[in-house]
Length: 88
Image: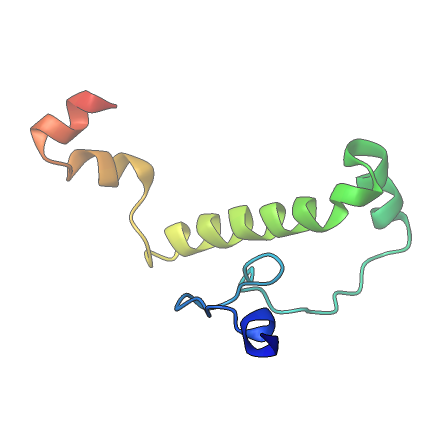
C-alpha cells in the first residue's frame, strides 16, 4: 500500500519557472546627475530603464540609417512587393 501513495506519474514536459529570459545584458551608463530626475519626472522611476532602452534603440536605428547600414523606411517601402505595400 505504501508504494501506491508515493508513486506519481512524471510529466514529459520540462518544468518552467519564472518568466522567460529577456535576452538583455546589464550595462552601467554614467549620466549627468540631473538626467535620471528628468526621466523620472516624465515617465516615473519604475519605467526609467525602458525609457533609456527605447531612446538608445531609436538613436541606434537613426545612426545606422544615416551610415547606410540599414534601409530607411522610405527605401524599405519602395522595395516591398506591390501587394505588401497596399496592406499597410
